[in-house]
Image 1 (tube, rainbow, N blue to C red):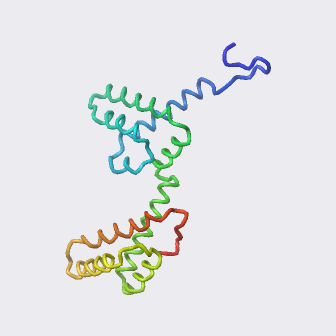
Image 2 (image 1 turned 120 degrees about the vertical axis):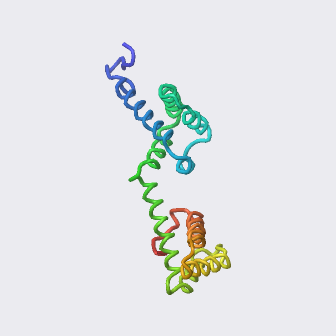
Image 3 (image 1 turned 90 degrees about the horizontal axis):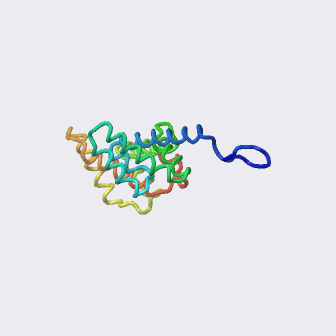
Length: 184
């Protein structure tokens, strides 16, 4: 008998049903990847060799051909190790650890921005520069001034958004293990 241990009679490896379930899970993952917008796709921990397969599946308009190309993408994904697939699933999961960390980082950056634009702007800027010594202090001061002027004049929030991007870049440069929740 094929797939059985001669001595104990137990089956070796996963059953055919288990293999099929795993293959269907990977197919669902492939469908999610094809449907993602390019900005979110760029943030995922994907191998560079998989991107052309995803792009090809997106280009196809015919339903059946797209389904076939998605199945081919799933075949390529099954060649990846299980850890990489779990990491990818976690990054896609809205309630996953990666999403929670990203949301926490977003809130932390918004907190810093509000502190900088609040009444205690100067001490908040000093605290930000103390926490991130490599930050461009002149650029941050200029963005804070411009954002406050925009807010006062009722102009579109260009500097307000740019200030957020600068703070977010500072937070992204720090590894997650070094971050503390004390900043915001």
